Image (cartoon, rainbow, N blue to C red; front, side):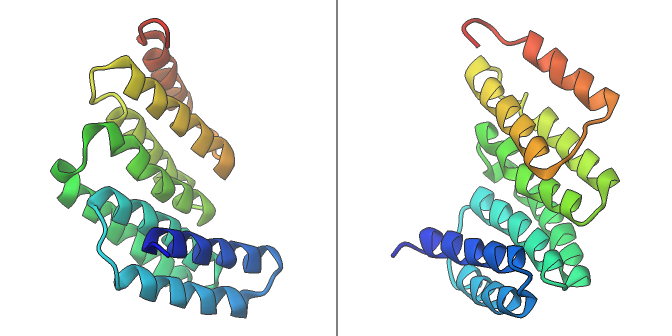
Amino acid sequence: MPFFLRLNIMLSLVEVALEHKDQAQALEWMEQAQLLFDGSQWSPEQAIQYRGRMSGLRYLCGQQEEGRKYAEDTLKMFDIQYKAILNIHLCRTLLPLAKAYQVMGDGATAEKVFSRAQEEGLVNPNSRPRAESLSELACAMVESGFEPSAELWQAMQTAKAALKDPW
C-alpha cells in the first residue's frame, strides 16, 4: 500500500482512539505514524501538511510540548521550503498547521497562520486557484472551530470580490 495511504489510515486511527478517549492507544498509533512518516520521502507541501496534522494530534495525545515544538519547526520549514512549493499549493500547505494551533488553544498563532494562508492563496494571479484556496481556507476554519478576526474576514471578502467569472 502506498505510504501516503498508510499514513492517512494511521492518523485516522489516532483520531478514532482520541474520540474514544483511549489516549494510550492514540499515542501508540501516533508513534507508528511518526515512524512511517520519518521513513518516507515527501514533497515539501506534503511534509508540511502532514507535520501540521501530526503536531495537533501529538498535542491531543498528551504530548503538548512536543506537539507545539513540532508545529513551530513546521512553520520554519514552510519558510525554508517556500520557493519549492508550487504557488497554487501555498495556502493548502499551511491549513493543517493553522488547524493544529487552533486545537492547541493558541488562537493568536492560528490567526497568524490562517491569515498567512489567506495571503498565500492570492500569490497565483488566476481566479480558479484563488477560489480554491479561499474555499479550502473557509472549510479549514469551520472544521477547526476558528472564528476569523474582522481584519481576516475583510481580507477574505476582498479576495472573494476580486474573483473573475465564473468563480
